[in-house]
Image (tube, rainbow, N blue to C red; front, top):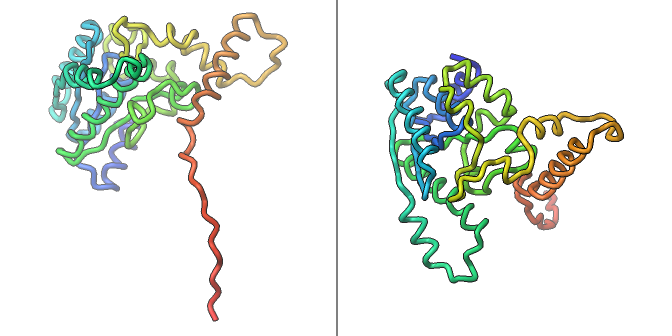
Length: 253
């Protein structure tokens, strides 16, 4: 058992957790996370939750799950098609309320709700699939959507490290080579399309601490993208602000 799987297993043991629940998208982050969970030997429930999903993404996810089920007898698969639920949600919104980004994020929140329902049924926890760049660099996730989880096993791994570990653990080449995407848009746009930079470029930004005067035009452009998104999404990465009431101190007589 590798260090991360051991960490997951120990957390479950310490907190009396009976099972692990993960949403599988067909991307490398959820593929690695689900593999790490399966390795623990604990009951691992893997869900695909298509919402007008690109068939290639969904099929990659199911093939990965089938592979894990062949390798581990503690892995169980559920497909929960949320397309009808999502369409019903959209239908109750007035025309002026159908903001496209808001609706895209609603897909992630419907999936989060589904994962927690299954976790409740099986005495489990929802395992996050976010990597370091997404979770702590640019905040590229949905608050209370894919960001709504109980533990985050790969949140300290860069995308490069995720890919390396996934390859070591036998994740398929089709997933290793698939363009990263959040799966929230009907047009299948990739993360790079939305962000304007690759994960490798963003990793460089997170680690850079040198002289900006020596940077190329592209490096400066990526740095601007990184700084803008980090500032814009910082509210996702810090604890929720709480108003602190002033209280009079009481002294014993």
